[in-house]
Image 1 (cartoon, rainbow, N blue to C red):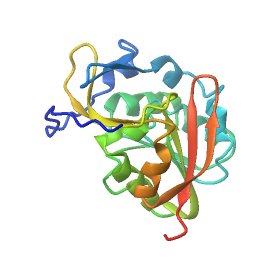
Image 2: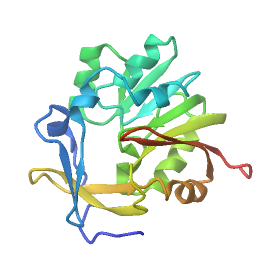
Image 3: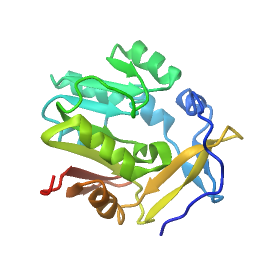
Amino acid sequence: MTAESDVDCRTPVPDEFATALVGTVAALELSDGRTSPLHPDRWRDRACGADRWLLDRCHGPTVDLGCGPGRLVEALLARGLSALGVDKSDQAITQCGDRGVPVRRADIFTALPAEGRWDHALLADGNIGIGGDPVALLRRAGTLIRAGGTILVETTPTPTGLWRGAARVTPRGPWFPWAEVGTDAIATVATRAGLRVTEHGTTTNRCFARLGRSHAH
């Protein structure tokens, strides 16, 4: 299933998730009328539980795209790995600073440190939806990792296909482009981005996939 929204998302919004990051809201309103849960308490907590699926598959320098308050970066550093968070939210940058973890304030699609040299790139907590075009986002993530590197993605926990449209942080925030990728759609999305799924993972409430470059690339 693929849905396209008619909501105009061309005007950039500087800090769409600020109210979620401080915990005042816990849902996205989607342009098709649905709501999608957010988990700000998990974002601000220390990495634990299902986060270990992601952490256990990182064995070298890792960049966390859309890192939020930086819990995964913090956990990777505690494991003795090199890690960097990337987020464009001022609130996320502040919270990373409070945690003492390295972070770059930037849009994912702008120049980033060590492009092409990271072992792993993370797209956790639904961040595969950033920008509303998962294929373009995965292509971008692919430019950040070295040959043989991996992209670790969190998908929606139900097989909902690929949905593209707009979202806003309730209540009544501005619209921004967003997407959701179900467990049943990640392989197709990855293939279109020149990648392939090498592993799926499922915990009680969360689903993941590990991606690598396709043999043709």
